[in-house]
Amino acid sequence: MLKIKLSKKHFGLLILILSLVFGIIAFVLGKYITYMQNLGYVGVFLANLIGSATIVLPMPTLVMTVAVGAFLNPILTGIFSALGSTLGELTGYFAGLGGGDLINKNKKIIKVKGWMDKYGLWVVFVLATIPNPFFDLAGIISGASKIPLKKYLLAVFAGKLIKFITLAYTGFGILRIFNPGI
Image: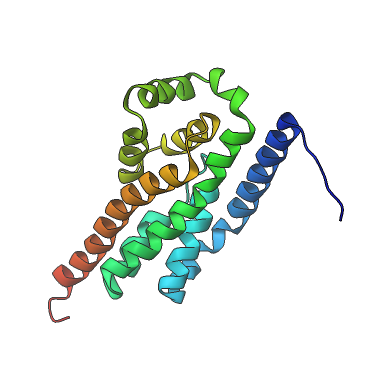
C-alpha cells in the first residue's frame, strides 16, 4: 500500500488549492443555477450547494429558494436549501484550514475574527441567518481557528435553516397574495 505523508504546511496548501478549485468550478457552473429550480428539492439543494461553494462570489440562490418555496412545501424547500448551502460553506472552512496564515493580513477578516474571538460560534450562526457578505469570512476564520467541524456545521445549518425557511415562506406568501385561489 502506498502511503503519502504530507507535512502540515503542505496539507494546508493542498486543502486551500482544492477549495479554490472547487469554488472556481462552482462559479463556472453558477450560470446554470436558475435552471435547477425545475428539479424541485434536488435542484434547490444543488443550487445552494454550488452557490455557497463560491468564496466571496454571490450567486442568485436566495431568489431561487423564494421561487421554489412558492410552489413546493416551504419547510422542505428551506431544509433542502439549508443542507445544500451548509455543505457548500465547507469550501470557506477548508480554505481557512489550509490558508490560516492569511487571516491576519486582511482588514475585513481581522474585523470578523474580532467578533468571533468575542462571541464565538454565535457570530457564525447570526451571519448564516442573515444575507450578508461577511459569511465567507466567518467560514475561513472558523477553519483557520480550527473550530471543530461538527460545531461549525451545526451553527451554519441552524442559521441557514432559519434564513431559508423564511425565504421559502416569503415565496409561498407572495404567490398566495397575487393568486389567492391557490
